[in-house]
Structures are given as C-alpha cells and as structure tokens.
Length: 145
Picture 1: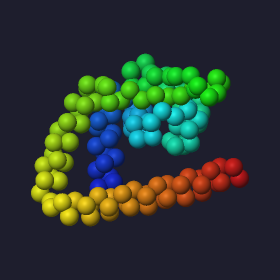
Picture 2: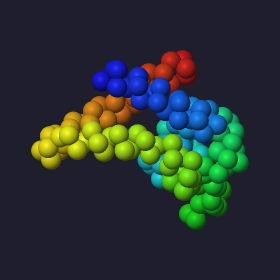
Picture 3: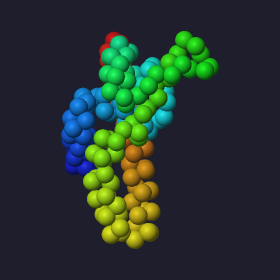
C-alpha cells in the first residue's frame, strides 16, 4: 500500500507538472472533482491550506480554466468554486494512457475478483480518510497550543 501510495503521489506530481500546475493546485482540482462545487472555506479545510493561500490558489486555477467562481444561491456572501476539470482536453489526454492501461489490467481479473478488489480499495480509502482526519486533528491541536 505504501508503495502504491508513493507511486500515486509521484504520478500526480508529474501530471500536475505536465499541465503547468503546482502539485497543491492539482490536488485541489482533484478534490473539487471528487467533492463537486464547494466553498473556498471547505476547500481550505480539505487541503489544510490557509484561507489566503486558497484564495491565491483559486485565482491561479480560475486563470488557467480549471475552476470558476459562482455566487452561492443560499448565501450571497459566499462563493462556490466549480470545477471545470472534466472539460479540459489536456487533462483528458494526460490521463488517457493511464486509463487504457488500467482497463487492460482490470480485464485480466474475473468479475468476482474485481468486486473484491473494488471493495478492498473502497475500505482502504475509508481507512486513509480516517487517518488523515486523525493526523490533521493532532496537527491543528499542536498549532493552537
């Protein structure tokens, strides 16, 4: 798992660089893709970045066409960050070789094996999410001391 995690991080860093983005910027784009439209404050909490850093990050992503700002219909003081990730051809083209290789890999397993693998990866993701929350709680309690 650790090796897979390392390869995933290195892959994401290379994807970000190939798209002319900083890794934190691209990580934020991926978070937005996963979570959907959210506020800058929510993005700050999810990334652990300070709100000022998130504002600069959103400015860069908006300038490069990865997100757009939209007024929150429920609270005029808030702005929703909307990902435009899926519509960027260079992102699709960058991920296409990985997608094709993963489809080929998945085809080498039975439906039953894929079901087990999918279940394991889902549970592993939940475990990681829990660990991230625990580590970020420890970090925020240390910084407030």
